[in-house]
Each structure stands twice: as C-alpha cells, then as structure tokens.
Image (cartoon, rainbow, N blue to C red):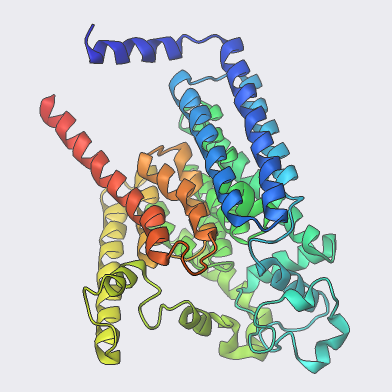
Length: 457
C-alpha cells in the first residue's frame, strides 16, 4: 500500500468513527484540558510565568488533537456540540479564578467605569487627580498603570462596557463577567456562521477550546473579548446580507479598539450605502457625549502609548528590532532611524492596502471570503507586531473556517510574549522568532506544498 493509500484509509477510518467513540475521545481530551487549566491557575497565582507558558502550550497540544479529531471526523451530533460548549464554559470559569497577574489593564477598566457611573468624563481627568480622591481604594487604584500622567486610552463604546462591568460588581469580577459573556456571544455567532456555511457546528471547538482567548479574555478580562464579539456579529450580519447591521457592529468594535477596520474590505458589499452610513451614525452617537467637553482628547493617551511601545522610534516593530539586533542597519543615527521607520510603515501599509484591495474587488459582490479575512488579520498582526499576546486573540475565531497551520501557530505561540525577560533569559528576538517568524515560515511552507501539489496534479 502506498503512502497516499494509507492516508486515504486513515481518513476514511476517522470519518467512520461512531458517535460514542468521538464523544468519548473528546470527553477525555476535554478532561485533560480542564486539568491543564486548573494547573495554569496555580501558575498564574504564583506568578510562575514560565510554568504558565509551558502549561498553556500543553493545553494547546491537547487542543490541536481535539481540533484534528473534529475536522476529520466531522461530527454533527448535538451531544458533541454541547460537550464542546460545556467544556468551554467550565475552563473559562476555572480560569476566571486566577488573579490578574498577567496584566494590569483591567484595573483601568474598573476605574473608567467608576468615572462613567459618576457622570465624569474619563478623557479629562487622570486617576491621580485630587478631585477623584473619593473614588480611590486599595483594591484597584494602586494597580492602575500610569495613573499620574495618563487619562484613558479607550474609545467611547469601551467606556460603556466598563460601566456595565462596574454596575455588575465594582471590582475586577464585573469586568471578567463582561468578557465571559462576550465570549459566549462569540461562540454563538461562530456556530451560526458555520451553520450558514453548512459546516458542522462542532468546528466551534477551534475557538472554544483554544487557550489564548480562555486566558486573555475571560481570565485576565482583556477588552479585546468585546471587540471580537462585535467582529463576529458583523461577520454574521454580513453573511446574512444585513449591511446596515454589519456596519453598526463594526463601528461598535472600532470604538472599543480600532483594528476591526481591517474587516471592512472583506465585508462591505461594494458601494452599498448602508454599511458606511450605519458605521458613521454609530460613531457619531458614541462620541457625542464626550467630545463636547474633551475635544480632541477623546483619542485619549493613544499617541503617547504608541511612543512608549517603541512604534514612534521604530524599534517596536519586530522587523526593525531584528535589523537593529543583528546589526544589519545602524540604529544610532536618529535621522536614519526616522527614515527607516517611515519606509517600514509605507511598505506595511502598501501590503495591507493591496490585500484590502484583493478582498474588496476579487470576489462576487455578495461573497464573503473567510480566508481573506484571516489573511488580512494575520498580516495586520505580523506588521504591527504587538508585544502582548491578547492582540492576536481575535484571530482565533477565523480558525473555525480557515484552519491553517500558520494561523494555529501564530495564535498558540503568542503566549510566549508573556515570558519574563530577566538578564540571561529570552530576548525580544527569541520571542519574535516564535510569535511571528515561525508562523510566517509555516505559511510559506504551506504555499510551497500547495503549489507542488497543483503541479503534480
């Protein structure tokens, strides 16, 4: 028997698995993932970041086995779907018990929510302002990042969700509940998207059991959970040909964090007036309560934040960092560094613009191409090279339709960006190699294999 015959035989055996076999295997893997999640709670509680990363990668390996089983066996039974959802909910509830030792962002969320419920404009006052003394406490205020110099960085719809979280509970718990509910919305939208495409809804496991959103969304309460929920809702609305609704959902996501803009070329029905009209209307309504008092300050601390992350000086982009680290280009000349950064930005924008053009024009007017959304999203993350893993978490939802090896790698290895960097430990060069260059090489390899297969045929 040839290798090809063996592969076909294995594939056939997977597809002929009984309901009980698939359900039993998924239950066993789900139990192992639950145990891994509980172990990760201990790691995070002890601030043992290297142990947490190792546990997350073990979780990722188990997740890959379960995802492969679902992709090959294609189970369509409701019992499998509810097992997947049940495990997804349980591991999130377990992870929510961990303290926020991977980030301090949620403390700012609570603070901003308090200001909104007090009727104060968060774009005008830094947390250390004397007139806000009555809002300070020992549980939240001491942990707020840049509380002496930075008013909020977050747009208006984000403020709305912060206020909801504080209304639920004036603590980190309220914010975690908001992000947990957002994840349930994501899972529901993805299941509906799969059903529309006549694919087994069990493929929602590719999002639901992935470790990255479990920890960065529900556990550490990153606001990107609400962004991803709006993105998933916009995709679903666009596939239902509800352009106005899709535009409103995209605006909601953009007014939490700006990156959902990348979906517009892939979701906009060419020249349909409803999406841009709804988008602009929602944006105007969201900013209206704040812009009268704050003016241009409604853009928050964003510019200074980008400078702190090294984007203004270039070294924040991993490609420029590597050029500097390997001494390929001189980085001690400020003028040269400025020109290099501008050149990099121009090149990245040109590539992203070209991808946007393909997504917008190279499809039927009503067509939604998941692979283009995934490609644009991955390219955006690659070129902006965020230094934190939660900025890659929105990519996980594309896996349910585009289970590409490079996308698996980029989202599973993003956890290494949580690594501590003491003297003698991993450098940014090491971390970038795992987080960005390994997925890129896997993408190139996949392209080469696909090209070779087409030539052979």
